[in-house]
Image 1 (cartoon, each protein chain N blue to C red):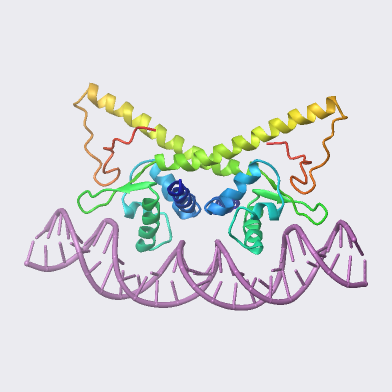
Image 2 (cartoon, rainbow over the protein chains, first blue to last red):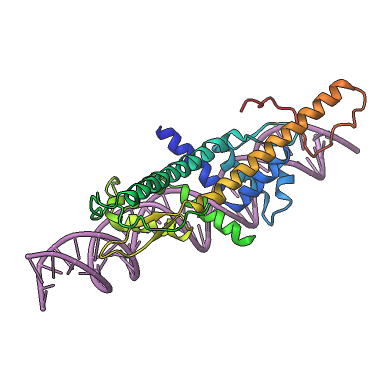
Length: 132
Length: 132
DNA sequence: CAGCTAATTAACTCACTGGTTAACTGCTGG
DNA sequence: CCAGCAGTTAACCAGTGAGTTAATTAGCTG
């Protein structure tokens, strides 16, 4: 569980950098060598190498040897944990609103049983951001 | 487009910290005050305040004034862009394998029309990582 | 073998992040 | 009004991250 935290830390950290996201995007279209990956960027090769190390450490890419090249390969499975975390919490959030909606319908139908506004917790359920 | 990059940068950066993820998880279950959010952590209040500022800057939460409290509210919409980016690239990756499968079936059926191995580009399409 | 190319490692700089303590603002209730 | 609570701002420190240049490893090729 703590290890899962570290995994999420590392994955989100890796995705937080635009260069690394671009590398992932490039690799999603096919394996590539370090020099190929470096080409689009205004960066020195060691810089790319560092980014690749970050991506490798969190399992997003793997590297093999092929002659003097080290082709990089995207391990899309590592995206799963990050995607799962986000989806989980979007789901929880959505369910909360479903319950809130149900509650609002409830008290609208029977506007007498007001249990009183929670004093400090959940101070402002009033919000409109229901779209998307 | 560049602004979208910054948005993704900020969102993934925000999610990269376990404390901030825990705060988001807490807020997914309902709005909360700063002190309520701070309670589970071994952190001083200014520390929490900083984390909240990070979350606010990337649009993941919003804060209002209610008497002496500043209740925090999760804006789940900000998770959308991050989720969309991940899903996009998982999709591209999956499609790539679909095409690769098609190609493999193709050359398996007619094992003569080898166009020759690409010299440096795409050095190793050979890989077994097909399992999720 | 000599030399070229691919890529990494080492060592360093600079900026930023995460955390602290201390001081401050703003509101409320006695 | 003032004591006190909720929260933020300021100033600082240690650690990390992104980038550089220079040197090094490893494999191919003439």
